[in-house]
Length: 212
Image (cartoon, rainbow, N blue to C red; front, top):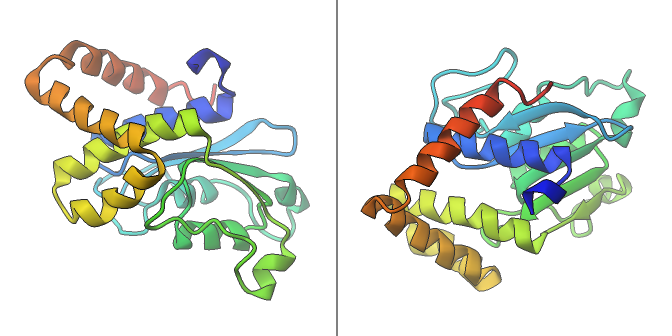
């Protein structure tokens, strides 16, 4: 599956893995320009103490989509921004959807739906949002499973409000949640140690090569 993914999706999941390994919510995002070229990437850094110039961290709004948007020119003078697309491993929340709307990005792609906090609904918003004619694509079922493996593992590790958070995911993507629970048990038991180390090393390499 990985070999068939677009560069934008690959960068999203590499960013999500970096967040996972760094102790933040495992969510990654990327933005492509009017030609489909990746021009920005961001990841969740809510629980981290360092960030790239122009991005934010150690803050409840240090979300992946926000950090990706902060790296582009989203002012009115950049008319091409309306042709941009944003990709995220998780359905944007109300904060991130609002930032996407206000940046005039017209195309949203997300891997996994979020029955709890997801807010990527351009139809049931106010007139301002409806007039933006935003196109939303997601969830993508195979990618959703991968994303929810990481998210389920992360939430179970944190141990905070587990039932409220995971129940909607279990309803919409039971396989992803089940695999996330199994992944957690494998890592705890040491059976996944080699794979974990290999993926972690890959993530470290990707950090320096994402935009090449």
